[in-house]
Image 1: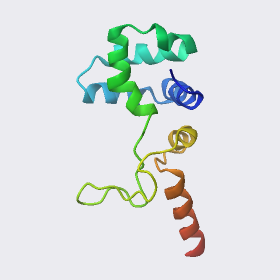
Image 2 (image 1 turned 180 degrees about the horizontal axis):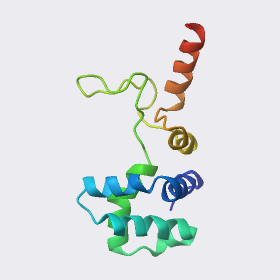
Image 3 (image 1 turned 30 degrees about the vertical axis):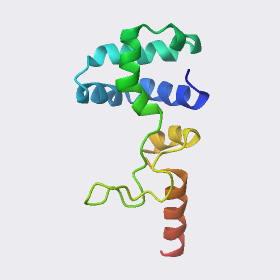
Amino acid sequence: MLNKYQTAVLSYIVENQEELIIESAQEENIDANASVGVAKFLVGSSDNFAKMSDNQQYHYNQVIKPLISRVSCDGMIGVHEDGSSSCIGTDFIEDDQLLGAYQLDDMRCQQCTSTSESWHANNP
């Protein structure tokens, strides 16, 4: 079952950034058109999550879920050279902040965002 935040994020992605689903599917070597179809199916009705076939669930788990659940925070300064995160929070964008992160193309958690904004406000 998708929560209200995940539903809003998925709807936004389907309507405005469908290429994210396509790219995610291509990275997983999965049929991108089918993944987009599953995303549209899920946005169509909150009841559709429970109606997914095994194949649709596979597309959801491999392609769609990583875009709407436990999305990694880019951190304060991006990824360190060793691949570790510069996030000062939980390493994930909070569900209630994720839609705004996609809309603003700023994939940081609330703690990283507010700390960065505070630093910049105090260090012009």
